[in-house]
Length: 261
Image (tube, rainbow, N blue to C red; front, top):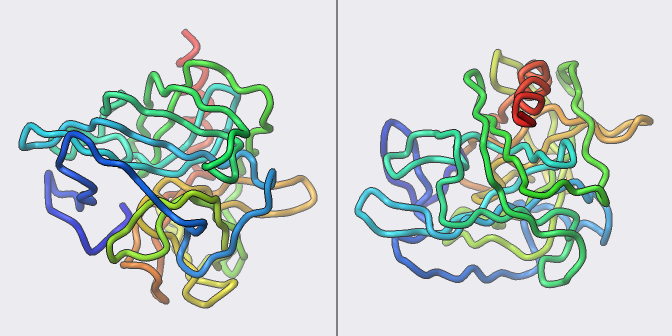
């Protein structure tokens, strides 16, 4: 999962400490992704902001958090598996917060465009840090991103979008979608390794970018290949470990089909 300067060890996982209090309000400027750039209104509209309010903590309190993601079907959002963890830090197949809201198709979160819908169910991959969030209402006004069933080549440049922070120190989710590019440097069974490409060599995801989409751009439009999972404190020039999506598309389609029952 995304590393930050505020972490604690629980159930063998590094857990970002957002707030161990009942009420906490996020504020932010018009930035996200370290050394990225702002997205023009209406572009990459499949990008999703997940807002979790009232997540139980191991001490009996509540905290708030946020992740990024992408709409892959009218009623489904893909994100990182670790975005849905219980009070012990264990990934679970259910919304863990009192309320989890998906904001879809809203480049500027201070505006009113796009849609806000509730997350009502979760499916977890057993092989990668990937989860699917089911929405209570299908979204027909935003075109979902296409899933790629082919791995990107080593050296390929992929694009990332996210609503996260711009740094790991005192991270705060930002209010405008941002983007950057990274280069594929390695492929493992469940991980795609990437390094910064543009606008800067250390353009990288940050806390609250977890689950944000990495996608190839081409004539057929964006094609999702991975989601933000884990990396050093941002910005950084090291390898970012994204969760592969291209090799689990059969599971994704089956999970969505089963979720209609």
